[in-house]
Length: 333
Image 1 (cartoon, one colour):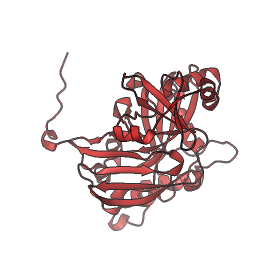
Image 2: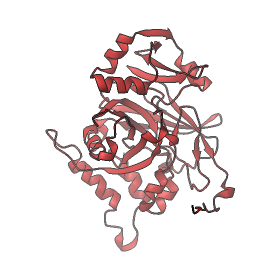
Image 3: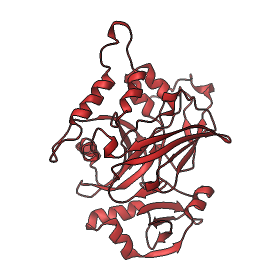
Image 4: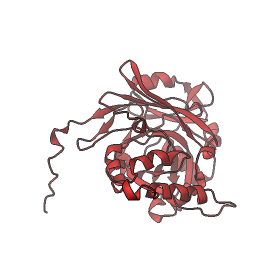
């Protein structure tokens, strides 16, 4: 089952459910967030609750996408209570690109980079047996709900950025119940948009490189994550395909379990605040940057995998650099 939402002409939100090719509005649903919070409080599954509410009129999701009326598949009424976060070095093969970005030279060339050390820790302890706690992954913060970009809308690279590149990933979507319990709504495709040139200068700039907008959806996959996800990451420039490469996800292609990544995020009290929404991205091993691609204004990122429904598509918009060197001045009260 897949869930999405769109904005109607009167400004209200319609929730859409589909199983296969047919998509329908969900009767009486105010938003995916409202549905998820209701289920978190009453202990009912999303599938059962939606079945009880019943189906409304049929909708053409692709037409909605083409018209630009699809919303992110979950939002919080207060954007400050939606958290965009992620993990890195979690996929088999993900270390090679990072290692090349942070590799040493000369006498230090034979020593492992910190990235490789982190990756090896995941290989050795990221899939603990019998429900035990495994090694913690690399973790980063991207922003709050103000950094969420709707499917089809531009990913804007700030004026001070050195690069704007895609990262095709799977994200977990969560809400926090009134008692602080995290509930997983489902999984969605995401573009964990980053600045790889800045990151390459020094791996300690990773935090800066991640403070960028991100997009996810258009649909949320309800239920378990497939163990072997085989998708495609693509960049279009005008009529040409500039870049196209498979991306793999799911636990068969990862060095951590989803449960281990979830534990090391939600173990922090600050991430278990009632009513909050979390979009937590699980990492990737596929980057066009690793193949020498330099993106430019107007390029279109496409991320797709059959299990997740519609393609996640966003154009790149680069802010003019004219004001990049103008300092931000803080005023005194």
